Image (cartoon, rainbow, N blue to C red; front, side):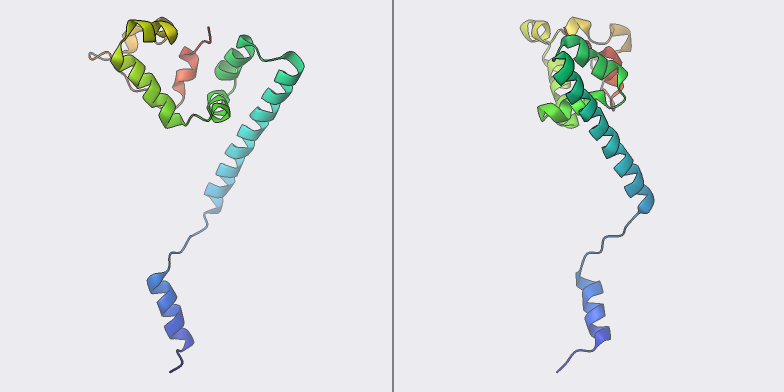
Length: 132
């Protein structure tokens, strides 16, 4: 028994997953990826010309919109891992770990909640980061 075209189409609709294309989302995401790529290229050129310095990394994080994302991508650390690491350091509150991570240079106590822990959202953390 041969199946009709309508039966085949109904089978595909019933059993397959469809991916819809959202041009606006794709355009925005492509622009974001391009911005990250351009920041990486500029960083590569600066490192080749000037060498890798703390000042260069500080400038990358503080001045470039995607600087911290680029630095995390280069080190292979995801945004989520970075936030978990920061939260871990804050929760453990170990003297040696705080010293090694320069915790005294992090956000001021006025911005912490009553538990002493405040979740960092997005990448607003870049203004608090200084490479020692």
